[in-house]
Image (cartoon, rainbow, N blue to C red):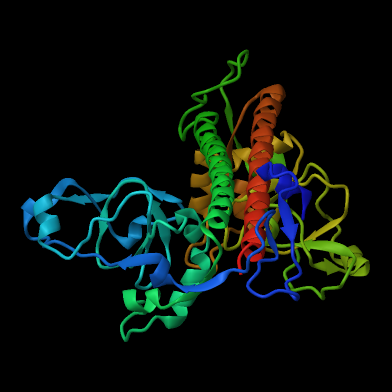
Length: 423
């Protein structure tokens, strides 16, 4: 058992690891104290499968009431369903085949194309016909069943039928057989995954808030088109900003135009898909690099996408030699802070300039090297102001990356536990 799991879940020594080759219907990992094999049970024996209905949309008296009424499009990544987009009246509910589903015991389960999107109801509600929802019995833990919905989804997709679009019926879903432990073990497993999902949700919110903060700061810390000062500015700086051509503050180069002969090792080769990390699993020989790259990226240079994706940039932070494809432009700053240049390319005015100079009729769309040099950028006169802005966004990017890595760790942990804690 990876120690990170115990640290994340405060689980101490509560795990047991079984040899799956020695026992059947026993998960590889389970909580200590549980030894009985799991039992195969039909889904219809542990939950009631409930469909939905839709009141007439031509009768206004049926709509805008107090009863939540869900459609499949409302289910996304959220664990819980708290409030539907549309609500129906009691008259609307009485007029159709919808059934009021109990809170805390119901897992909404989409049944047509896009089969198996799920959410736990936090308040009683009904649905349209696009659901075969699971109302679990009293001897079944709702979060345990919710945690195994990927398995249920796989079964439903295999059994779905239909000439226009695939759909699983309530009867078909109820016939699915899955392994279930005792109620106590279900509760222990469900509680653990509930905690893990809560951690994932918290880190996702922190990550999303930082991304939104960065977007807001990019809008407010660079002058809007036609203006000479930003809305928000570090104290002590009052001089108006300049509009400078990118070619006046950085030399612009592009990469090789031909697909190289890749090697197992050598000099790392970057393309547009590598812009986020500036790392790649592709390499070219050192001989080819020496021949084709009289100019190449060095620490402090900026790489920017110019074909397909336009204007995404990153600062080179390695002393290793790097090769790059024609889909990237190399910007070598000589009169501007590197990190400021990187973020100024994401400012509203720079985005407008890049868009205006992009060849949209080309496939894929692209911006020529000479047009990149003509892009007008807002530049503070003070090098110190440039550096402070660059450092601010550099720190924001570091925080965003940190939370993204935590999210990936938590999701990978959950994925591994789902594979090893179920039969």
